[in-house]
Length: 336
Image 1 (cartoon, one colour):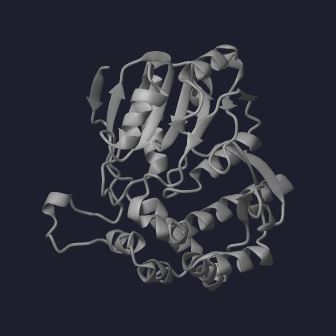
Image 2: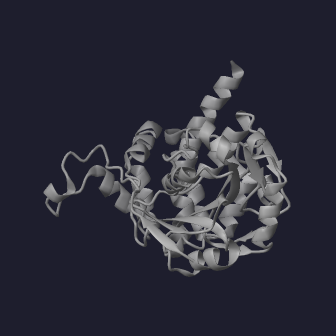
């Protein structure tokens, strides 16, 4: 197994930074930095304070757009390049990445996009796009996008055999067999129900804080629409206005479809959440040519999130705000 390095990932600087880092005094922090520290805090009170610092939805989304995308490094594991696997990861030497290259996808060419631990500006969508751009240098038939915290169910030979039976020139995206709530699962978009509020208030204190945060900011951020799966009891949490299949943490694109999208798939304004649903919606409304194969792979929940997982739902509120904006634009378009 040969591993190569490529440090060509771009780092986007905030538009609020007017000086190079080396020219800044150590005490300098931009407004973007200041807010990001509150956003990433382990204290839920700090995250709530983060949202209180914005006057409107537009101001919050502008911060999302200005937030840097973080640094990353590409590490490649050599293999057959007709199918290339892209895996964003925090630690190339960690348990999850090791399992991917030595067990789950062994024999395929793998591109790890390594963000490193403690990367305060990590952006999953950006790292996915970086990996996609790198993969397309090899002109593959198929590009697999996978989280690192997966586990093997079917052997990789089944993946290869299944894809060989599909014409990659006539297919845009390939779904595998659905996981419970992690990939290729049915999702509906609609208005929240009272059942959702009651359930989360009873569930745990983190959920209650999320519901309260939504209530306080519903008008300011214009939050109307929510999304959930069809699994019980989540199916009762929103009314159904629209349904689609969410690609989640594992999906396969044809190289041809990536070229059609100019190598840009994921919306990098999202911050580590909802970018998969956003892309899923785009695939549906753009009438992408979809195929399905009988291949199973297992998913862990939040394996790479670490100690910040307990406040994850509070942070994801901003992604819901941004998705609502894009969803409203979609509804206006179909009305006309």
